[in-house]
Length: 254
Ligand code: GCO
Ligand code: CA
Image (cartoon, rainbow, N blue to C red; front, top):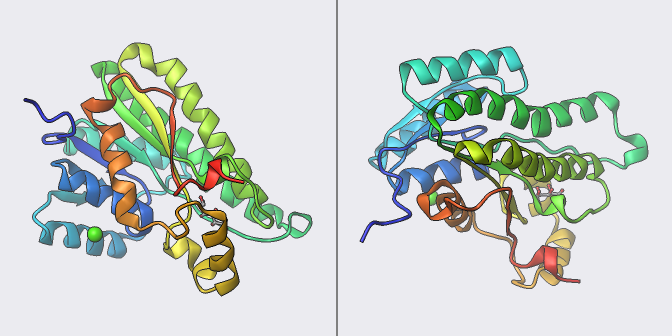
């Protein structure tokens, strides 16, 4: 009986993976046999994260490049394919948050947020897909958000970007599924990550979240791994354009 979820021998690139959701997903894929390549802009943080995975007996390398710079992305992906090997799995996780009332939202912060949360998903997927299409197989997982479905005050630009990530995922699937690629998204609800530090420290927010979420709590980062392993594995060979919400029921409840 073959294990449909086994990722042994696969190479996975995870953007924004020195900490938070990206690191947890890289760890999850590694725990199921994948060789992982960690990406971020800070080589020292990446080295430390890779060291943590190696100490667990996993194969981990680093690829520091700026996912918002299309030329840097193209050069980095070409280098990875040539020097490390074919990328079988891409997780587009890099993202940022900036909270402010929309009427006061700075234009430069809007541009930075769109570049990091949306443009990067296009740039990295396009560069990686060019290689995957040549091989006739590959799996791309974009990290959307509960905010792909819901909205809340002070994060309208993030909400717009994550809504676009959900639809870009569908668009990628329609362009690339016939050529052997599966492209899907994971939409996390609220997890205790560095990106949410301000929220974690806000007791009022946690009280609101616990009341608003059917599961009644924040998610634990390890609870995101299963969705990534599934969508990265042969078990998802006929799943395309799907957004899988991992949110304790937040997006389906009133
Ligand atoms: C916020 C949070 C959310 C989470 C997550 C929820 O301020 O509402 O940052 O956007 O990060 O995306 O799914
Ligand atoms: Ca862990």
